Image (cartoon, rainbow, N blue to C red; front, top):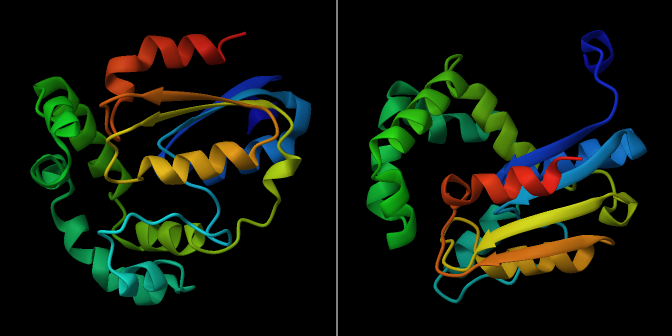
Length: 200
């Protein structure tokens, strides 16, 4: 696809679970990837995760148990019925910083359109994505030789900052940006900084 579009070198940027794909892209394309950005990302599931104490042990074990998309599909099926309502659900359950961001009409509209498009073909792609993320990624993070910028909100409830610290420690070349008091959707307030760091 990149060749057909005439794209030579490029940078990649990810949010949350997209970290696996951005880092895999960097490992696979080598020097063709100039820089990598990770927003609120976690390390691979086959390394010990520093779970917060409030996460029940049964959930910690279940999260890292390899699952098939077929088993996960029924869990995500209700989400696919009304994807435009997901931002309202997130706003009700996330930390104050994220509630403030998602409470903005323009942000809620962007998220609603994103979730609607992502779930246009039903819950199966989401279930497959989730199943993949909790399996070993298939490459060592030491093979990512590009400079990686990691932005992580210290009040992120979706992906706690402790997971971000593990990821930062595993990357050979990394700059960590700890966003004090921010949550999982901090990019909406820091977009200029993020894009500026990844531009050549």
